[in-house]
Image 1 (cartoon, one colour):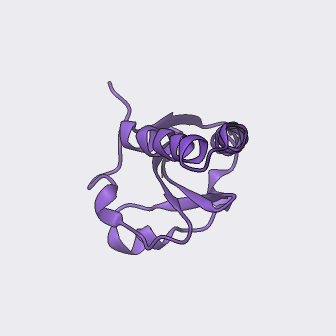
Image 2: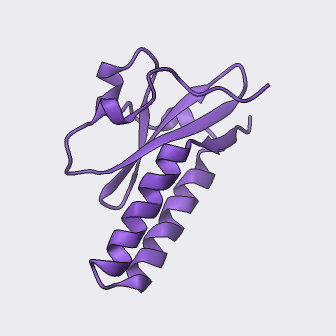
Length: 113
């Protein structure tokens, strides 16, 4: 079964901010482009069997399930809306950072009706 994959604005902003940091502060636009390619490949991969990914540390703080997919040294956070067959990417953080559950939505995102 194939899932639709959606992304919250906050998750997109976090990914964009990290890519910009790698490109400008890290002085490596090529590495930023490579990292972004890995991120989009991981996002695309969530279309099939997103349940194979482990629960994220943030899961302990939320009333809905939060899973993670590791992309290099970063963690993409997502939740699955089974009835709608939709995966929502809800966050991105460096793997060395402590979980910041307050950066995630209080409730799982839902598709607009």
